[in-house]
Length: 187
Image (cartoon, rainbow, N blue to C red; front, side, top):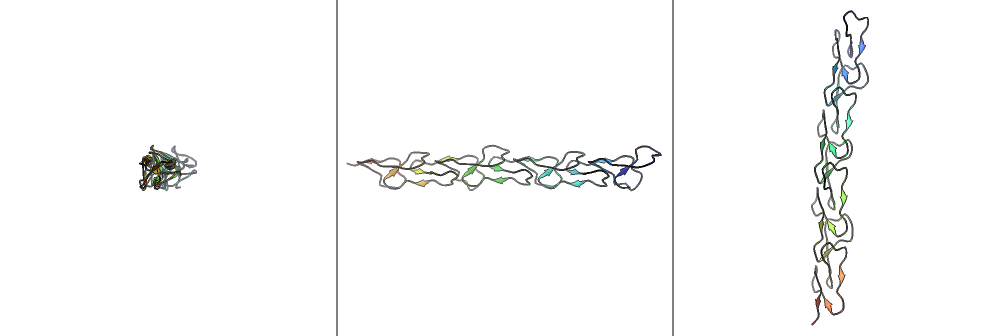
């Protein structure tokens, strides 16, 4: 029978193949064959091994496929291991692809399970897959997390780099243009 074997000559009965192994011979099997990496056979008495889906993997003689861990992926079926997501990307458990971090978010290390929001005064201007956040330039500000652009300081205000808000020019000073980096004295 499929999925069975008789190890010794003149056996009185056939035995089921163990989990992770199979026998495709109709008769005469003296042993079972281990499933190759990337395949599995659950339960006993298997007549074939089954391919692991993308996002999963298995080692030799496995009875089940395992999900790739967060931060890793397997793009193809029948994988024996998972690959690590690059910087700027992340994945959840069982992923077949890594997802790029959205604008305003970043991932500075490989194997990330998620992206981190850029803090106030910082941005990630790349459309996707940022590996770091940049400071807002002097004359600009950003008072909210997870942003992709800095805003210009209005006329009458100024800021330094990494500003979370613009500062009003004091009495006797002015800023005549947008994005001022300092106030000028009235003369």
